[in-house]
Length: 251
Image (cartoon, rainbow, N blue to C red; front, side, top):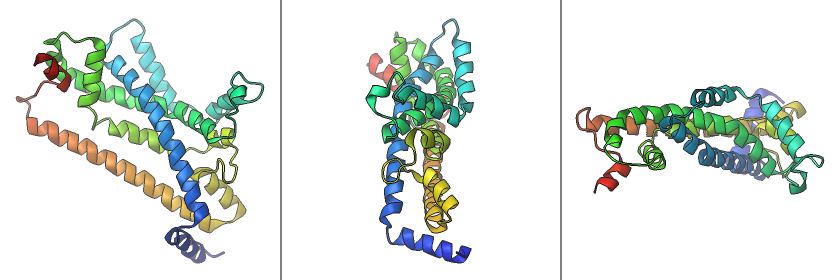
């Protein structure tokens, strides 16, 4: 098939709402958003703790966290596969070759990204509000919760980076999901398969959707970060307000 015909057919699939294409897109979003939600629940509190707490080995934990940014996806997929296989310790759960297994693999890959980026953001906020927070006798948990609230817009960058990693993942989800049609086939694995089969229209259509999603999410994160910066600028360097949690305690 000529490239012109392939692009035209891909456009037709997108315009007509091809059931197979949008089923794959829907499963991709479901898996990736679930993984990012897990990463947020685990990674954001961890980042806040590392930003406010001082304990022996903290530097080592931060170093390991940053090192995990380079986790090889295929190795993560292999480890999860061994854990979820029938002979593995979690084999009884029956998660292998299901969307659940793909969420597990993507969560392992995404959590260090969310935590590492969020930690850098929260450390900056902690330095900014250190004087105000010192005036209130708040526990570390309350300080961490306050930082997470105050930095909520800036933290969108961390979540966007995690989502970008998750939705573009191929190796790990291929291993633990099996790329089963109608069950575990997501955009990246479908693009790889359809390209090898020579079905360029479907591969191109999925590629356009994947690119559009990635650009949209990153544009949203950039916009939220710019909004947060503008909000901070409007307060002015001499007119900083106390963090929300501290204001509530001081009332």
